[in-house]
Length: 370
Image 1: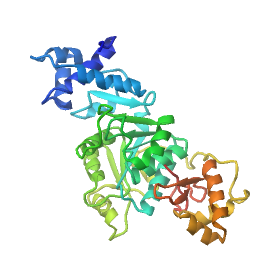
Image 2: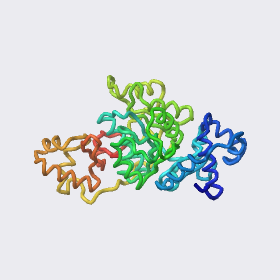
Image 3: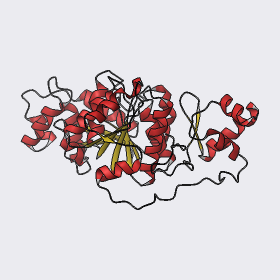
């Protein structure tokens, strides 16, 4: 296989090759890079020259997938990752440019999210996106997926940090979300494209979620949730750690209650996030994108009113409204295309327009989707 051309390509190849050397992890590679001034000189400093064929195969696969590579030290390498002792030597990125690092907030939580947790994650992420803040999360099921979908539904920026390579869309239930993220978002991994899901890669990924964000919001987390590890990473990096209160006795909220007990900031709406960050904002949020059919004036307003702030199955909506299953399915389909209704992985439906919630501490009757 022919060698890559150009100084940047040679750096990418050098760092990718260094990662194949036993005993050389990101932390040691960073020290070599700082000592020698470049990835190429760091590679040349080794006593034995490693075989670069597997690295070149990984880079060729990335190119075939349309994934760009960003090496340590490049002008477009995210400055926030230098806060880590072990920044990724190579980033594999889908999406052009980078989100504004000064206006990025992570929204994370359990994969086994409750309807309440998903609804709150959507609301917070929707409101952050409406204000132009990037929602960062880990592309997992549950809270992560809800956060990404809400930002997309609000036409806002969102970045997914992967625990796999780009050739693996994990979990399978998030394939529709991956398709949306590829069209309008960022997907970032430090793993070569062929790397599949492993138990160790997800905790490692979490340090990137923490580093990429000015603040981290934990919406729901059980006693052993990976979100708690992400919160510890964020604290170590000097990021703001915030948590949504849970009901006492809920297993999915044990971790968030512990974070609050230990001093995490309390979040009930997006204004709490902005206050914690000292961000000066207007008194009212920017206008929300509206669909062509407004509630109350369109023929499907009855369905939006029935959904309220809850997640409901088709049968439940039909029962509440006294409509046939056929009419309900047709109306849900129209509103889903129109962007007013979203669908969860479990098949339940929810409102995405948020027209019954102002995002400023009122009753949580609206929802944003991911």
